[in-house]
Length: 95
Image 1 (cartoon, helix red, strand yellow):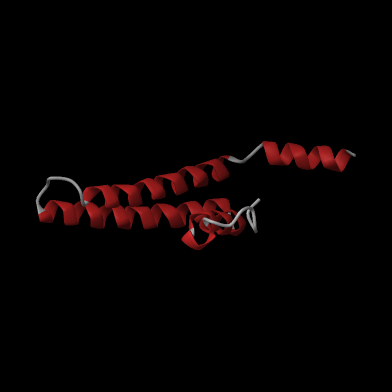
Image 2: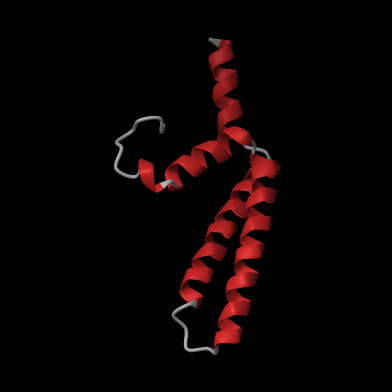
């Protein structure tokens, strides 16, 4: 009974590194969204190319930094949610 309480406390209290990693992963997704939205802006082609390139590079850096902080299991679960092949499946492999 005590072990169950200990594990539930560990699940509820996340470390600062874990929270920072999740935040970096969210920012990485936002960078990719910015890259997609930049194609529809009225700016010149060179400005668009700069925005897209910068946001993709920043997104990759933020993703890998966040992945290092949260760990392999969380990143694997995160990638499975974003993979289009898994979008129509209901609950298989995703908890």
